[in-house]
Image (tube, rainbow, N blue to C red; front, side):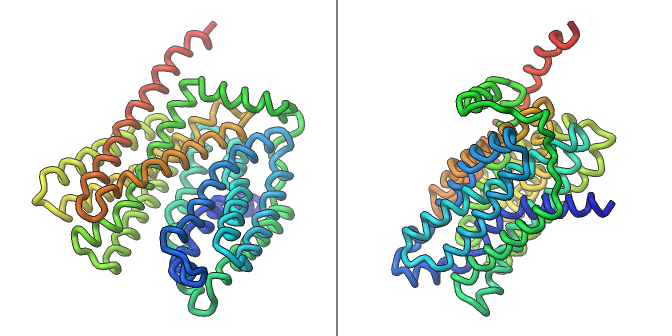
Length: 400
């Protein structure tokens, strides 16, 4: 029991590394840009660099963990993360900080991708979906708590101190992993391939319509979340006059919906197949997204129509994300690291690509955000149908 709790705490903490890296220093961005004498848009490049590193790093550490085991790449990644975070605190120019943030993201990606692979090493099917549902607690809470924690730390330190805090977190995770996480991929299951074989494995995964469908469902859901995060501050505060304090309450309530739905999913997944729970989540997301679009286009209803739709969109992801992840990894225990990496890259690429679309009209109209969310949600229905059809085509081969 103690071992399982310790393992859960370590995996949960690894999952939190990305939102901590992205969100902890957000309250310090104005101070940071002032110190370097740059514009707000230039200061935000430090955020872009970290996101790019988190995406690219997964393609490095995922396949490496399939070849070398989970522990060695994870320990190297955490050590590099702690070092890069500490170096960020002493950057003397914006562009040096941008470079270090890229390295920080690359190294931090080890925690995200290998955590998912470890879950697949130890669990499959409904059991894996249940674990991923529990991790929704981290997914939901970390983006809310990280900026609050950063703001409180700024009472006693500067933006430099926030990066020192991230370095301490990285070092603590390094010690916890080194002492409390056993290797979960036996040598007999490791792949001894070349870089060429790693590329071939990735291409094979993308050619598998079952995997690709689930990966797209997950990536499009992540895009919905990013669109909401990117567009809602401007739409709710500037267009509809919501105060920053009330917006914070709305954001927290929606995050609570994500957390609660994730835990309901965890409770149901032993009795209801993950595929059925995923179908429910995708359908709910599509209905909520289309209702949001209708409310915005019709007009006149205002926040009374928009807020419930946004809540339903975010809450639906508590059923979509854990089940899509578990189902995508089900048939690939031998390359769980590479498969996990592709899932992560698709999430970040889709999220980064669609987030700007939600705010193309600035605070003048909620239509772009609603169109983006609705299109992604409907796309999730199509992606799920792709997986289902591919799975049906595959069944005759399994009965021979």
